[in-house]
Image (cartoon, rainbow, N blue to C red; front, side, top):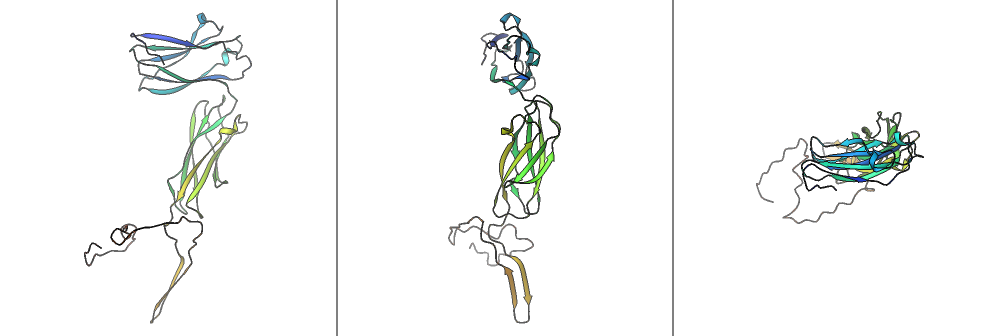
Length: 277
């Protein structure tokens, strides 16, 4: 945290000397919070001495304040015998500049990360449900030719090819599923990204849960009726009572939940006696 006591104040925080000679793709990432007129400059000293700091990138929030992340490629400095990093904060208005989560890594060529997975609130039987997966390219090279797979209860139900993603950027992929039969109300889904040559497969998948929109009470099926002069005879298949949630209702005559208000179809209900019960 940098907070100057005078206007147009500045300060620098520096690292120790860092040897990146054995790295293939050295990249530093950092998060910064600043106001519109503040800025944070990442400086690099190729020689590892204070006097040789040179600006590498500038971070400034022009439109609105808030945290943001920057990613800077340090491959041009691999041949140097140790470098230093400096974070130089400038605050014209005497406000506060925050620096956080500074990470220096040697990135693999490819590393696709599943960062977010959104499932629908409810799924209807035989109706297409939409899912959205966010994939972040944390590798050094652009990613293309990968696939995103949707699994229901561990079984693959959809696989699509994802769009090309530049390093440090994300893409949102839509997947769909149609459930024709569900034994329980809760369905477990997993989304997974499959990228050839992925340097880290531990961050490729996320899981979520969706709920089936089903009747609260067991539903009869195959309803049939026969009308004769004497009587009307109805028949149906016994509902499947296994695998569902047990619904408990505790109420009395004066405080029962109304059951003839919504989803009545084309029925018309008439209150004949106009009584409260």
